[in-house]
Image 1: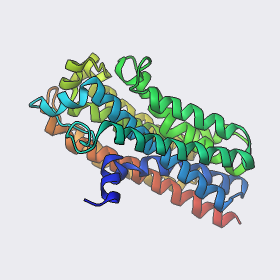
Image 2 (image 1 turned 180 degrees about the vertical axis):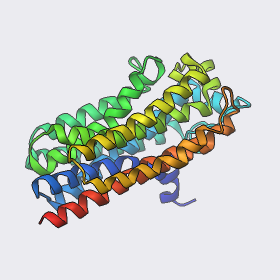
Image 3 (image 1 turned 90 degrees about the vertical axis):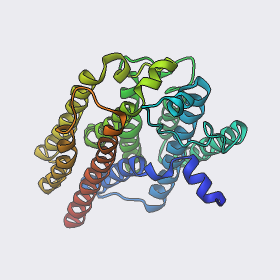
Image 4 (image 1 turned 45 degrees about the vertical axis):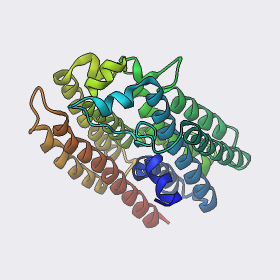
Length: 307
């Protein structure tokens, strides 16, 4: 494989939309509500956010490999590994992997520094907070994702919802708003749902490695109920955003994206083999991206109408 292909696979580049969508939403919110849009600042925000997300993916792989969780996921019969496989599979040395991860972190911080010079110091506050959450999600001594008390889910909601939407809005306008924070909730919760559902694929291996996700702590049945609750909560916030005018009413077309995901829940029992959760994972990813894309299109169209 060539260098670009290796990079994409090692960093799990294919899931980058879950970070780029909220960045678009924040900028489009500024465009619709305030009529402000600065293209080059937006591009730099995309670069910084994408770098931070890929760093997060790789640093998670690095520490899950060091803890033994990824190796156990490959060795456990009914578990399905969700890491890149570059460390657990011996395709890349730990040193090279770490250097690439920290290079991405450096690019993200550089983008934040440049943006802070034009939009304000709070950009760096967002960047630093996001970096700390990304690193300590699995890195000691904090390990949000290993504690089984919901800290990991809160960290994901902040990292893939509140911070990128609010940060992108701030870059465009130089101010913060409760509207932008509320706008972040539908896609933020759907991405939280995606990351929550992926734990079903290897929760037995996580348990052996001492990675106490909520699926490990609660068990399948209770965790599935919580998963459904997250789904309804995400789309409930979408309805709220439309009712109070943060997005136009036709953004409610995004409710249709819940249907394929909801149907999959109906096929699951109280206890399921890991393979039964693969469709749930795929549908969760599609719902998060498609819902975000429809919201983006609605904000863009309404902003153009208001010009």
